[in-house]
Image (cartoon, rainbow, N blue to C red; front, top):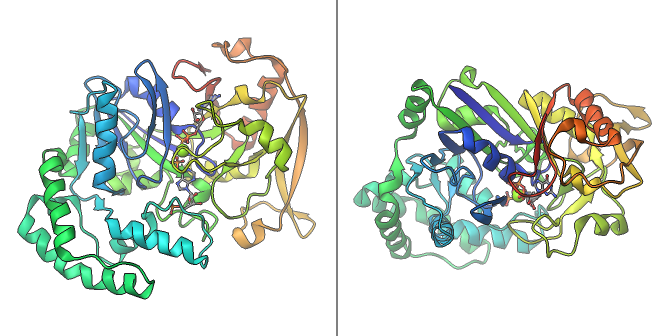
Length: 424
Ligand code: GDP
Ligand code: IMO
Ligand code: MG
């Protein structure tokens, strides 16, 4: 029996999809535990190349289960589109189930997100998938859940109850209002297409744990974008930290056996907010690529050019503290192969003094990163499959991460594909 939780250790897009796909070979079930289709998780394996948004990256494991968990906000149209897409690539989806308690992300949530972003008043740079508004409706008890699709007369009552609040907010923002019938028709369609996949989540997950199965909980985004612990307000609307896997699925926290923090060998972020180690535009362009390769630095969800920066160890250390990593998966070490020198931020100074905590967003804009310069290794690591064969300077880079985070680096990504990995 193992319960592994896998989360992002930076600002998202660390390579979670690749590592989940790799680890899912040993898993009986993979559960996505928060977020929605703001995620873009890239998987490259023998079945093809995929960018998954709602479907857990364990879907490729034959005979395994993939669970769309309670803590998520799920746009059913997007889920159906994604299922159809991967089925057309020959991937079986009969093992995919949805928590009856997951929130349904509605078309009006997307409309509201777009109106907010357009107004320029919030400046968060969201993915415009309606995530914040779906979670807001959940918190103010105005959301519908997948269980409501199983009883359409109850569902209709709920739609009639929630729509006046929604339409008032749309009207106040100058958006189009939605008729009850329009949402009800959608609900009927979703019920027809998805009812057979909806299950009661607490018994579903706990039974699997009690039967001694191997479960992997897949997080979305990363520590710095956590609504409580990240760079508020430039965050998402859920908790991408490991402990939330237990809250979301309804199992005891003490049953977690492994917590894997996924990080990339440098930093990237999408959207607004402080980013202390951000590179100058010319250096960043060199890292980013032109967008014609699967591992170029463009958002897997929105296609936006990612902001890029040097490795920020205070971020990784903070992520290790709030998550309790038992190991780290370090992706994209190969992307540093050609550099003479590599900068690494080891601490922040605020008002001239080194600080030993993660400041909130307002002060994070003002911190001065303290850098060390590491020597590059100037050889390709793409073909390396054993730790001992990595160049010495790459090992030094990895050791620096281990000592900053206080956690061993167990997996090292040397390319986008499933097998381009070193297990240390
Ligand atoms: P996620 O959101 O954490 O799943 O990460 P994304 O899929 O959004 O972004 C990670 C990007 O890095 C994708 O383009 C992956 O194909 C790529 N990637 C992941 N691991 C590696 C690696 O070890 N080396 C290289 N070159 N690319 C990687
Ligand atoms: P994965 O799972 C990177 C960012 C957005 C914005 C903020 C809030 O692929 O790592 P939201 O749409 O959630 O309300 O946007 O969070 N963001 C991501 N950045 N990777 C993601 O997902 C992201 N999901 C949201 O750019 O700054
Ligand atoms: Mg991503």
